[in-house]
Length: 467
Image (cartoon, rainbow, N blue to C red; front, top):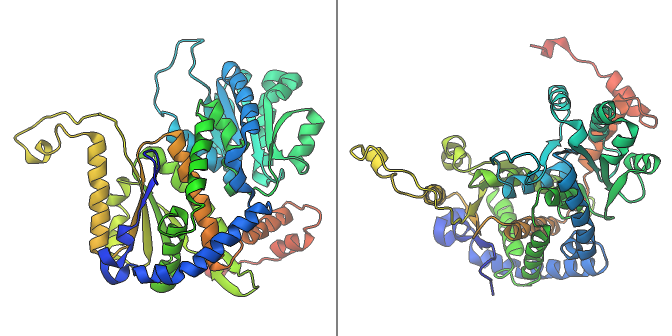
C-alpha cells in the first residue's frame, strides 16, 4: 500500500484505453508478465550474489555517519566547494544541489553563513576555468576531485589546473588540507596522488559505475556539505527499493515503466524517451537521467553477442519552457516519442497579483497560485499529447524533499536495469565510451595507444568536403 509520501506513477496516457491505437493494450502487459517475473527473480538472485551493488547503497548507515562528520567540518571552515568531475561524477551532485538548495538567498552577515557555495566544473572550457580560478577565494575553498576510475582525462586536467591555483594562494601545506578525493579504494592515478600527498579520501564502492554513484560519497558528500538531509535521501531510496521488490507489474513502478517503454519501442517503434520535469528545480534531474538511460541502454551487442544497435534516445525538456519550443514537434511531428512528465505537488502559496481586471488576458490570471498555473500547464500539455495519440506518463511528487528525490533517483536506476534485462543487454558497461577514451589517449601520445595515435595521424580530410 502506498504511503502519503510516496511518489506515484500515472500511466493512464500510455494505455490504449485513453489514447487509442498508439497506446499499449493491457493484454500486451499481461502477455509479458511471465518474462517480467523471470527477470524480477533473476535480479533478486544477482543482488544476493553481490552483482547489483547499487541496490545496497540506501543501507550504508556507517558511511553516512563518516560523510556527515566531514561535511560538518567543511560547513564550518569553507565558503566554497569546487567540485571537479564529469558525467556521473558531477551530474548527481548537480541534480541534488538544484533540486534541494534554494538558488537565490540573501547574503548572510559575516560569520553567519548558511553553508558553502558549490561550484561544479564538468567540462573542458578554458574561459570557465580561467574565470573561476580568478574569482574564488582560494583560502576559503575546498577542492573536491571525483573520478571512479581515478584516471578520467578531463578531471585530471582540471585537477592540475585548479590545484596550481590553490598552491599559489595557500602553499603546499594548505593545499594538502584543502583537497579531498573521491575515487576507487585501491587503484587509479588519483588514488596514487592521494597516497603520495596524504590527502583525505572517500572511496567509491567496487562495482558502482559513475551513473549509478549518486547515492555514494560522489553525491552524498557534496549534498551533505550543502545542508541536504542525506539520511532522508537514503530513506526515500529504501522506500522505493521496498516498492520495487514487488513481483507484480501493477504494483512495481520500475517494472511497469520499463515494460511500457519496452512495448512502445518494440510494438510502436517509439525510439525517443523525453524526460520533461515541470519546474526549474528538477531541470538537472533530466541531465542526470539522460546519462543513466543513454549510457546504460545504448549497446551494439546483446548478451548473446548478436549485433542489435539497441537503445532509445533520451531527450531533455523542461516545462513550461519547452511547451513553446519542442511541443509543436511532439504533437504534430514524427510518431517516435514517449514523454515522461515529472510533476511537483507543492504547498507554495505564492500568488499572482490582480491587475488590469478589465483586460481578460490578465483577469483570468490574477489571484491564482503560481504553482496552480504550473499544474494547469502540465495537465493541458499531457491532455493535448494524449488527444493526438502521443503516449505520456507522469511521475507525481507530493513535495520536493530529500525523501522524494531519493525515491525518484532510485526508481530511475531500477527501471533502467530492468529494461536492460528486457533488451538482453548489459546495462552496466560502456564500451562505446571506452573507445573514445582510447582515441583520446592516442592523441595524447600515451604509451600503449600507439595504434590509435597512428590512426589519428593518418586521418586525411578531403578538401572537397570542406565548405
